[in-house]
Image 1 (spheres, rainbow, N blue to C red):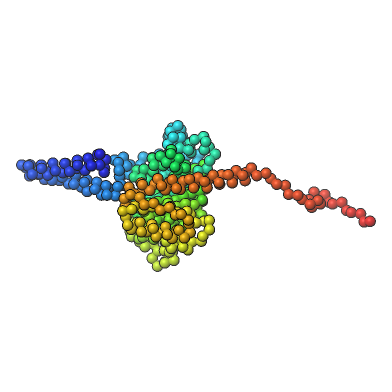
Image 2 (cartoon, rainbow, N blue to C red):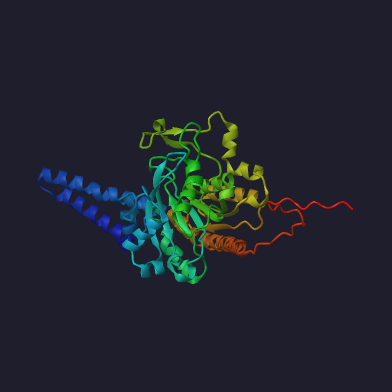
Length: 415
């Protein structure tokens, strides 16, 4: 009742505001009237902020708000890169957590990943499901989903705002979803930017970092993991939805499945750091100005019709908040285009509009659709690898006399 969107919280603000106005009216001294009037701005301002939060349904709880507002990793264990290795990560997890709890709920940690080509360094949050710590999965190589946040936003929003951990655990417990590792990178390098996961000509190579370098780095970091490819999915909401669609089509060899939630399908004006320096003043920029071919290459509605077909095209799942007509129309248009290449394209209309409520509602059907298919791909890959490892060596029949022994062959006598 007294959570950020609760009726009790709004009533409390109204009562506080009314009490301060009454103080202004009844105070005898001017100094107290001025003081009360100044204080009245606080509940009034809080009411306005709370109303916006309720409209967009962003922070459902105080915990979510505090985790998000304190920034960074939201208090998650932070394992610095440096001499980072899969073995060291596992040692750190064993030191900081309880093995029994990990096997029940999984574990989440954050690290910095530096791209060897882009030289971008950003935070990446990684969630390992409980099965990762269970004996029955000791030799299983887990698939993965790269989750891309919106703008303004940061990776911790998947946990503090969209509640992906609890949602996923519920699905795993019911058997509706299958275990996968969740990878949540920082797609913008700061909430003041909107890079849209694009490779800016002459600027920040965000697509290469998000679509190539992060998956490759995480694969090297996590011992029991499938390599980037058909056993990897990518999904996102809002700007992250556009990123997911665009990355899936441009980096189709690295992703087998894509989930687009309240996304758009043509690049918007970006918000990039001045002089392409991290932390620089954000400026609006059309990164494809004067390069129509490159713009089309990053327009999913165009690309889906011109991308080579075959088995390389990722499978798409699409969702939009039913109250946002623009999102629904864009999603329906893209679904129709994808339907020319993919049978039975899932399209979910979820409650609300372009809001946190819609994105939370879309998580369950998206994970329920994507993870079983990723698990099937992972199982097939493991079986193929095991078969190749156990395949007996077949000796080829060699014609007599064709093997060189190092000794001269006996000379045949003439008859």
